[in-house]
Every structure is written in structure tokens, then in C-alpha cells.
Length: 203
Image (cartoon, rainbow, N blue to C red; front, side):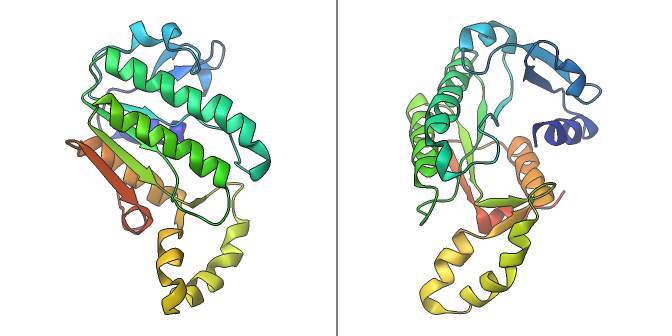
């Protein structure tokens, strides 16, 4: 998602820099400035960030599952903590964070860590946009399309309508469009973007 977001922002005329491990610079789209560092240690990149208009935090465990609770605490939580610290130190005007829709009946450890990150952002004093997708459909993530008929039915039953809407599916393009909108329309204070808003996002 980070590579696609960077490419779209560059296409739209934004100056984009991205945090990267040494040796992985070639993965960035043309026009993206590489910032070498460790996402789990702000001291390795804090002084290279500069006064960015918007700091986007996308670091997290790939393919989240209930079996990865320890990784959520060691990677998702720590990387958010370090990103917030770097953003505060550089007086970033706006912070964008991809959280997760909650409460939810599954993935409780993941939602707990993401909720703690949200509280961390609130406590930092940063202006921030927090996006709360549930499941993003895209390359390698097509099996949830099988759930679409169930979602359709659940949204028509009063007792399940709210959960089916709040925990709905979003496409990768919708998620990217919501992120671009978040960057181009910075929040004052804390703005929460839930699934119904994400699925309406367009480039």
C-alpha cells in the first residue's frame, strides 16, 4: 500500500519521502526520496524527516491473524510509538494512521494494539486522521469476495446492519483514495474515517 500511495501522491504533484531499510531503495517509485532507517527506532530517522506537512504511518505486520498477537505488540505498537515521536519532534502539521474497525468479534489482539496507537496519537497533541478499515481487498486478498453475499444479507437485517456496515469490505483503490484525501485535506484535531466513508472515497 505504501508504494502505491507514494506513486499516486507523486503523480498528483506532492513531494514524497519514504522510510526504507538500506538496500530496499529500489522498491520505491520514481521521484520518491528514500530515508534510510529502522521503523522501530526513531533515533535512526527522526533527524532526516524534516518539517513534513503530513506524516503517514503504514508500518505493521503483514497479513494479520490471531496467531500474531506478539508481533502486533512488537512491531505495530512500537513502530507507531516511534513514528509519533518523530512526527512530534519535527512539528509535523498532520499525522495519518491506518487503524482498524473496532469493536469486532475477531482479531481482538490486533484491535487492542491499534486502539492503543490511537490513544497515543490523541495524547501527542498532533492533528491527525485515523482511518479504520476492516478488510482491504486487493492482490493476494481475494478470498473475502466470497463473503460479499453474506454482507449483503447482514446489512438488510436490523440486528446485524450496524456491524456489517462498520466492518464492511473496502477495495485497495478505495483505501488509497481515502488516504490521498486524508493527505490533501488535513484534519484539525482528530478526524476518524470509518468504513462507510472509506468505500465512498474516489480519486
